[in-house]
Length: 301
Image (cartoon, rainbow, N blue to C red):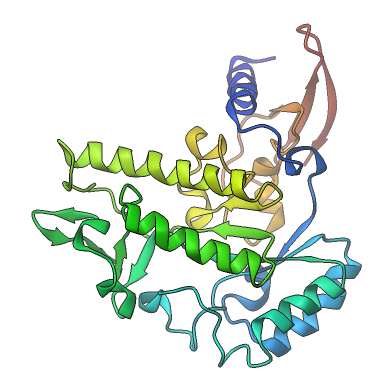
């Protein structure tokens, strides 16, 4: 095994050792249908979702995840992210009725949510104290017409606990795809000795919050997305039950990423890492027996 393959094999095994244990998703590996890519693209309605339920159930999927848009009355909901209430305009049959239809087909309902942000047009922005947001020099940080919530603040935790509890207990949501589509890199200077320290403490507080959700709802599945895996790191992977790898819609171009999917094997690349427009690529999985020995399981090209 080459040096590169050995290094990535060791990193893969390390990632598995530090992750939160005990969740059935790690061994069961259910099939998840998400209605965004190559499908509704953030424009869900009652009619569109109802039309998808039966074919999704026939496909063998176990989860039906309604992605972005379920909370917005129109397609311009980017800067209006607010209380995470279902849109009555898009979903007039009633959200609980819709999710019940998903359950009746033998599927578990899931939702897309972006827990760390509030849109500038949202009335919720005035409901939280100023210290609940990232700030620099007494000014709230604005990024892509959104504000960044600070999970160090108890008001943020209380608000999001209430939202998740409502979605789980009232609507029976069994899966959350946690997304993050802004890039706040300047940190916050509220209640810390430096903006970088504020950013780090927020990140740790956010992960504690996610971990506490799993303590509270042990069967809940939480996906880490972050705009197509922009925050794919070991700290996130240690807490979340699964990780989105890309917003790539062409499955062939995702082959190299998919090589590392197995919970037990390590990936290798017999032709080396592929480039974006290569005509050929090869990836495989090597089963490690725990005694230093290994065997090639399979490959893709």
